[in-house]
Image (tube, rainbow, N blue to C red):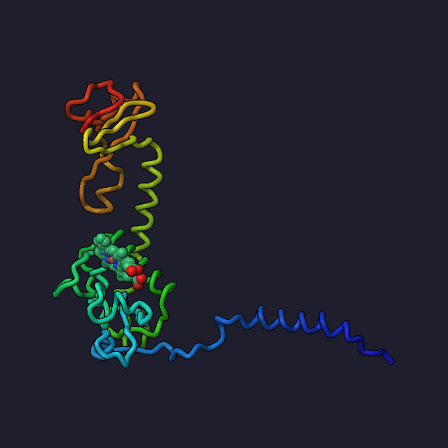
Length: 242
Ligand code: HEM
């Protein structure tokens, strides 16, 4: 008959332990937080930090998070209390925390602004506990994403593509160095080439506005269309005071 060795127990114990840790990491164990649920706007409004017995909840793109651990920002009197008890998604990019600014309507925002709101939602997912969905613009009464939420995700993805394209385009032409001091004011200069003002690529698609940056061009490139010499700066100056 085979005898049980006490030394055999140790590897078996370790194998069982690693099996359980691998298959049931702590994140899979239920927490004492209630399961995600659906909220109406009226219900969510109760959790705005005024009742100390209730958690503080914040909605963004229809996802609801418990932000009680950020009470100093989100509680009564906190700088970001306006975000509590509602979905004020638009205010995350507009910075308008009053009246009409506190809305979940993103109409007219650019794709990169919408992307930035989606990133705020990612921030809340990473930092706080997801507790449910707000029935309304972004989730229907069954908790399914609405057309509006799907549109937001698509627009944010388009914003990400545009920013990526801009990054690639801008990398093709070296940006000027720049510095500012009280005595000298601002100046731009190039280590190689000459400073020119140029329209930022893709910027109109991103923000709907024109915007220029300083980039460095070699002498044989200076004839290209769209290059602007800084006011008061010589054609072949390496440094320009602004
Ligand atoms: C569109 C404008 C802005 C929005 C939407 C915004 C939003 C927020 C939010 C939601 C938080 C809390 C993050 C958390 O839960 O930990 C936060 C934190 C913070 N914000 Fe803003 N913010 C804005 C502008 C500003 C400006 C202009 C300043 C400074 C001049 C500022 C300074 C801070 C600081 C210092 C914190 C961290 C506070 C701390 O951890 O104690 N924010 N911001």
